[in-house]
Length: 217
Ligand code: MGP
Image (cartoon, rainbow, N blue to C red; front, side, top):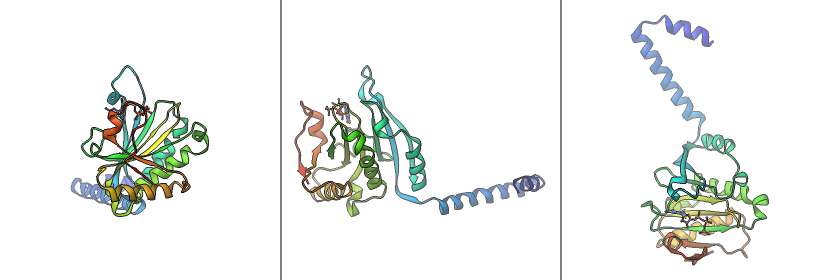
């Protein structure tokens, strides 16, 4: 079939050949749209590996961006599970155009809903919680407040891993609390578990590793 097609294309005059190429390109774009399912936003995956001799920002690398369900799964199944990364590494998934750092203009007035895990949970819970976090993001799970979401970060740390959803404005109380409630429910956390929301401005200036919670759910 492909060989027969190649022969017939070769025999076409130049103008017809160009038209044929254009038709085929259009066809493949349409086919891609039919086969692939678009996400509402384009997302960027970042990887951080701690090299202490370098400034923090130099250790951050953009892996790739995607905007379809299929491309998300193909990326997810190709990269290392979070639980297999070495200590000091992070993955971040952010809306394309927002850098996963406090300084980005879309993050600087925002904060994060933080899930802190025990060392034992790396093996029992971490990968499932991170996957659910990713699905909340790409599925825009927070109703009309999904626009407030900037991204999510997973920190692999010897002292205990962390997962957080970053939102853009700490002052949008209604949006922040809605996102926190839905997130807690999606993670299947018991109502007895309390999770906290911290402003990046506080995290960035904190002296201990605990900054105060602005909201809890
Ligand atoms: P971390 O990687 O978020 O948490 O921040 P970790 O390693 O668990 O440390 P802890 O302090 O929360 O216990 C570690 C350090 O990385 C910070 O103290 C900053 O020096 C740097 N860092 C982290 N973030 C998210 C940023 C950021 O957005 N911008 C800049 N400039 N530095 C950051």
